[in-house]
Length: 265
Length: 276
Image (cartoon, rainbow over all chains, first blue to last red; front, side, top):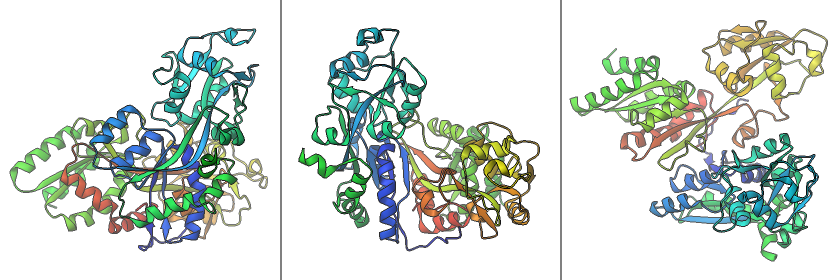
C-alpha cells in the first residue's frame, strides 16, 4: 500500500454510535468512490460521544441513536454550538433472551415489570421451570439506553439497579451465554448476531412492523452537525445520506427502515 | 545540546514518575523568562509519532518547549486530570467512564498493521484468531491454513518495538510469543526476511508494505486506506491527543499544528493513515 498522502483531499470525520457507524461505513464507501477527493475517517464510541464531539468541535459529524442524556443536555446549553439534526433511519429496539428460553412473546407491561425490577422470576412470565431473571442493561452512554428507559421503564421510570450494565452492543454476548438472561439491543445488531428476539404485544419486530409503527419500541438513527457550519463538504455529505437514490437506497438495501419510509407511517 | 532539547529528550525515558517533576519544571521555566513549556504524557506509541512532528512545531513556535513523558494511555489521562500535564497522548478511545464532559479528544491518525507472507504464497486471508495462534505457536504448518504441508516460519519483532506492542494488544491478548518465533530487529529486516522466505509469515506497519511481500486479508478485509478509514480493517489503532477544560492556548497551538496539513503529511510519511 504505497498511496502517498495527497494534500488535495478534504477530510470529514464522523464519530459516535456504533449502530449508525455500520450504516455510514456503506454510504461512505460509495461516497469516496463518487467523490475521490473526499476522505471519511469513521470512529465509534457510542451516542454520547456523537453529541459531545460536535459540541466540543473535535469532529465534523456526530452519529447518534437516541436523544441526548439529561446531563449532556444541560452541558450542551452552555456550549456555543447549536446542533443540526439529520434523521437518516429508524431501528427497532428488541428484547433478547437465551436460545433455550421457551418464552417468545412479552407484553410491553411485562417488559416494564422485568426492567424496573417489579418481576424478578421467570415463573411469573410463564416459564414453568422458574428461577431469577438476570437483567442486562446498556451503559447510559450508549444509544439503546435512553429510548429503552423511556419506552419500557416509562417517562419517570428507572432500570432496576440489579441489572448488570454492559457496554453497548456486546450485550448480545452476555445474553447468549446466560440461560436466565434478558437484555435489549437494536434490531440491526440482534439480527446480525442471531440472538433470540422476543415479540412485543404479539408483534414480531421487522422492517415492516417498525416502518408501520405497530412494533412499539423504535429509535431514531441520526447525524448531528454544527448549525451554520461553514464547510460545504459537510452539508454535501448529509444531503447524500438523505438522497432517495443514494444514501437512503443503501440503507434500504441493508434491510433498515430509512428516514423517508418512516415519514409515511 | 542545549538544556531545552536535553530535557525534551530526557522526557521520553523518565516515565510517569517524572510527570510531577516536569510540572514543576514547567512552572519554573515559565517564571524564569518568557518561554513557555508544554508538557505531554501518555502512550509510547503516540509519543513515537509526536517526536516526528516536533521539529516542524518548533519552527512555528520558537518560544515553546515541549516535554514528553511516558506513562501509557491511562497514566497520561490520570496526569491530565490531576493537572500535571497539558495534553494526554492516548492510543485508545476513552472508555465511557473516562469520557467526562470536561475531557476532549482529537483523532490525530490511525496506525495499522499488515500480516505479510512471501509474494508466491497462495493463501489470501487469515482470521485474527489464526494470527494469534501463529504467534503463540499453536499453528505451525501452512496446511492448517489450507496451504502446503510445510513448516511455517513465523517472524516477530522484539519487545520494545511499538509495532510488536500494537500486535500484542490487538491480537495476542497477553498470550506470549512462542519461542520458535524469530524476533527481528527492524521493519526493514522483516521486509527483507519475508520477501526471501517462501514459508514466512510476519507483520509490518503499512508504511513498510511494498510489492515484495503479500499482505493477507484479515477477517476477510484487505488492508487499504479505505478499509482503515472506514474502520473495517481490524488491525488498526486510533491515536488521540486529549485535553481538559479549561484549554490552555499552548495546548491549542500544539493540537492545531498536529492537525495541520504540514504535520499530517509528516505523520503519513511516518506510517500513519492521515485523518485531516
